[in-house]
Amino acid sequence: MATQHSRSAARLMMAPAVVLLLGWMLVPLTMTLYFSFRKYLPLRGGDLGWVGFDNYVRFVSSSAFWPSVQATLVIVGGVLFITVVLGVLLAVLLNQPMWGQGIVRILVIAPFFVMPTVSALVWKNMFMDPVNGLLAHLWGLFGAEPLVWLTEASTQSIILIVSWQWLPFAALILLTAIQSLDREQLDAADLDGAGPFSKFVYIVLPHLSRAVTAVILIETIFLLSIFAEILVTTSGGPGYSSTNITYLIYTQSLLQFDVGGGSAGGIVAVIIANIVAIFLMRLIGKNLEG
Image 1 (spheres, helix red, strand yellow):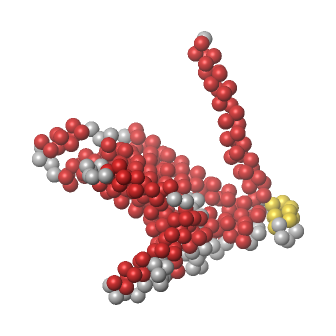
Image 2: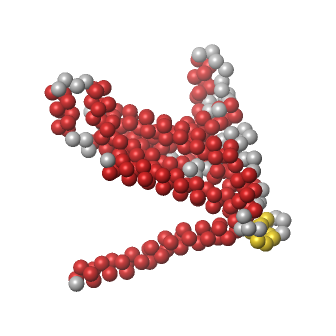
Image 3: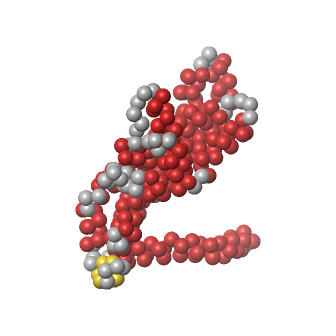
């Protein structure tokens, strides 16, 4: 009886937070869903009435939709590849005994705490500037013409910037997983004469599989909504080459002042994000069961 009363008290205390959280999510989502079925043009008459699925059809059939989907997949896939591969290598490196290990780990993790807008400005002006940027000077040392990153390699530039932000997160999660590795397995491998490469391939990597899956799941959810880096650097250009779905919704809603079309795009983005999340949750579930 006492246990039942304590559970009821716990649920009662949690109820306000749960209600607030549901309201925080459901109210904006409901308003977005409402406006997605209406023709709402703030600068051209306001709410012009119910249009059904016309906004969805216009958004999906627009010339920018499929390029934005492609750019979204390329950016997410590129960032995941870089952060997972380099994250594993960086985690293995940080796990080695070294002088000032704590300071090194703090410095490696630091980029994750930099605001996306600030990091995008740093990369744009200090690294990718074709005249005074660090990369331009490195290109000049080899006698090559500087690359105008934000126009000639716009998508790759976004991938580099975002990867720099998320690499510390991946490395931290993977480092924690490596530190949980049973030392007896490594000692047994040493007794069997296994070298560092063999231990990495046959012991460390299988042990990291669950951590890698978790990193992919968490990063993908956030990477689908990248916005600040694109706004500050390429503005989605040239053309639609670096326009992802989030930035396309922004242009529809706040640059073209088509709230109905932007709301429809937002619902489409939510649907895509949920499909990806469900797929990844099933993937991580199978990995954990295995």
